[in-house]
Length: 156
Image (cartoon, rainbow, N blue to C red):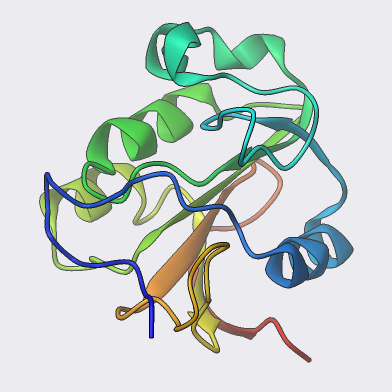
């Protein structure tokens, strides 16, 4: 059984988003127009910021539509902070992270700023044969949505 190992700082950080989950995301939130944290082997759409681009220094506000962000799980704080700073009219940012709801980064950059969906069932990332061993959340930064905490059975 292969699953993403939880070894902060030393585990692989670029597993692809499961296509069946992405289809459910697009049914609910609209087609993804840009991938904010990707490379040629795991991008969900043709347009993306690669590690060479250093997405965290790019101006995300130049992109409109539904933006996807499945960042390295070992360091989600700068990604959540950038999502919170970059939300705005015409732009919906979807951030997939571990459900670390007791952390400072969650309190500072997600809670009260995004609609948060606890993701059920657990996801099996591309290249893995078992589901991710922890809970995940999908944070939706959209100025037209009231921040809330919800449960989402994405497979229904």
